Image (cartoon, rainbow, N blue to C red; front, top):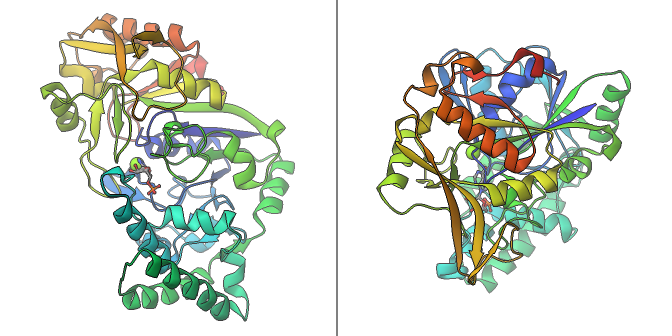
Length: 426
Ligand code: IMP
Ligand code: MG
């Protein structure tokens, strides 16, 4: 079976830590979409590590980590990351596998990303500028270089052809960038990448499934950044929802078992675009400060607000979520009152459904208010110990979404997760 773990909001739900926690129950952890725009933060023996390209199961000996065909891969980031995890004693030559169909990010993709953002002016997406959009455009535009191509004799010519095309495109944007240094790094990283395990990803994973191995597909970004269903055009360029697992790894839908959705106890977003429950006041500032809400990839301050059940319900429907993990619940400990968004007022009419378009539409969140709790969630070790007011908050969310919140993360550490033993089904 393939279980899926993904974010239900705008990314940064804490997936890295949760995957790391679930990893021992699986034989394979696989990334199926996104690229170095992701930043998955983990704590290994107390040390903070941020992963961008490598699946979050890499610190577990004996677990296979697969970068699937649906990912866009930057060799430079990958090389740096491999060196970083090697410092923790990880042997990537043993535990990391890359699909030969994975698309490669080249230096000019990053330049094109910058040029495109600049051209948008005030309407810029707030991209991480890692070349994600242009790389996926080359995939659907049928121009991309794939990992398997790196091994071919004519790779340099293929690269030059693509480079020439990109330089022409940069000319249309009237944008110049000196990419010489990037290119040198890129070719060094390509040489390194060629020494790793490059496999036919779809046979690789299906053979493992036939042997009865358990796979966890690790999502990047979040459901509300999905290119089809997110807050378009302020989205990323891949399908972040569970459907992306099939196309991003080459597995059939009937293999999918549990879909584990991760949400924060509140909500954040980094970059531009609509965010109905965003707080612009001191409360938003408090959330950012207490929750250390700064981007793991870009360092940008994250926008903060209350939990949005309209968006979460939408994400549960699209993904077929079977269980929820709530992260950063401890961050709410110091608030005397909290709000939960249960509906949107769109042009004066209340709805619990996500409108097709949120840009340029006046959306006002409808809130239900909750009392804060008197004891710290951070200090709890079992469900029974959780403050009553927090349990009520959880029950309201579960009842609204009709999906159980099974795991509550109450701190950054690997083992700071509360759950009932009989609930462990994955
Ligand atoms: P891009 O995917 O880098 O082009 O960025 C598109 C939008 O998605 C921007 O608003 C980014 O801030 C956001 N984004 C991309 N990756 C992540 C992520 O891993 N976490 C949170 N936001 C992300
Ligand atoms: Mg992140």
